[in-house]
Length: 245
Image (cartoon, rainbow, N blue to C red; front, side, top):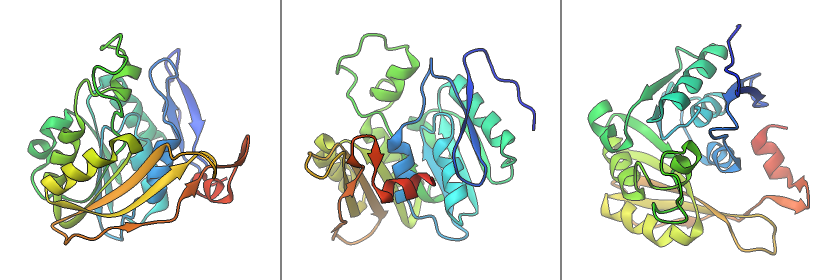
């Protein structure tokens, strides 16, 4: 399919099912955190999944490639990112499997309706709004700082969107783990499994993958660590597998 790229956009290969994604380095490009989340999430056959703050649509596209879910939706507030996501969906001929909706995370349960998804994912902004913020209108700052939504907004709306027994999956930073768990419990989405991500085996973790289940009983499994690099510039075998190389 022929698509027209804007002046600063590029087309990147995803190494899954021959899929590609449109990105703009001057706005924001997806990182390893989104790819790791796509490898952590379990979408069962016939289930419907929603990604909150989908950016250019990386997580719905990868989940469509990696899982047997029946339908995937991405919600994105920034018009330019939502437009790139829609064009990427069209480029990969996934219009029947993936919808991109422009809208506010804080209004997600009103937009889609309560208890309307089996799985909700999010790679939300990691930093609070006042953490080193200089230009609140910058697309990269919006992606990284809680300018347009907070962690509580994501977890509250994610919980409301889940059917009973549905799962909320996040990738975030370990320094906010206590807050994440507290908010999941507050909104009756019990943390059930967690995995810490380490850049090297002898370093501190710099990411956390966590799944909560709507209405579940307490009890969480801490999975084995995920190590990114076995040596400088060389991923571990598990990372290569997640990426699909």
